[in-house]
Image 1 (tube, rainbow, N blue to C red):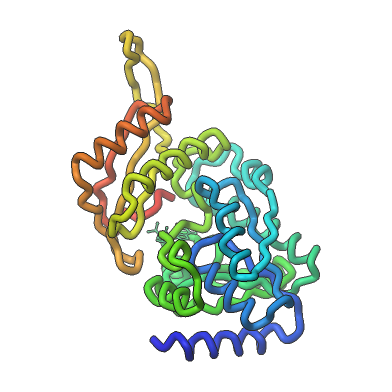
Image 2: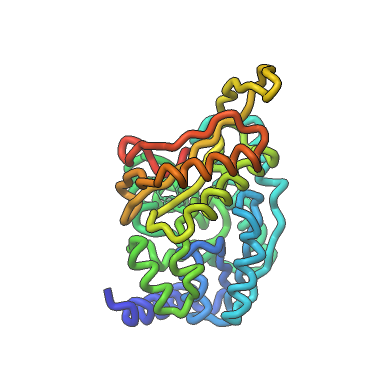
Length: 311
Ligand code: XMP
């Protein structure tokens, strides 16, 4: 694809669509929302405000790191601490689709408020082609595709949505990111789901359970650093497998799965061939650093029939 032409067209299109209205960009730090934020900044400069919602479902130190990266690009990012509202919305929910809907509804409520408070009339979003495909096919409801699921964002939530990269797949988004001068930490960033660590937390989503997933993801990412895998992460399962203490007492604990997949466009995926030594090293660190764990598993399932994430 011709990055230069794509950027020029999208910048013009954003200007045409929003006119002189104020726009808000919903930055998450992933390559998708980062690209649309830079496109929006190019198109609109200070007419665009960039907000990073801390939903409590981010990886270790992610909000701080993203803010610092964009500060270097001259783009000011406002952090909104909305952790409590997301965790409140998840309370008592265990069904995957209900969890997704709770996330999506909270996401739009929070952004709707931020938009209204700022006077913005448009929300810039990093929806990409597979999000739309899978939502249309009814595989799962991506939190960021409203029009495609029959909700008119203007009537339901009070603002319009601009989706400049909705025709692209990941490899092209990365090309555009590089072309726009985003650093490798963003351009080559692993995909991370919109609903964050909640997509890796089976059963109820609570601050305590998310803290476990966050540690597991950090360990897996650190140990797999430099690998060619498309995505690597840890997952907290809902089961409470029986374990045994050193002095022989029975106890129930947490089950953590390690998920590493090779993929090109996230439409198909196969499990990464991780060396036995590396698997054992991840197991040791998970058991040591997350003492509640009584089972560590390696997920061997391809997509299909599985998906990459767990909900
Ligand atoms: P799945 O799990 O459907 O994910 O195989 C495909 C790719 O999309 C990333 N991703 C999401 N997945 N909900 C998801 O389930 C989302 O909102 C979302 N956003 C991004 C996922 O990490 C994988 O790379």
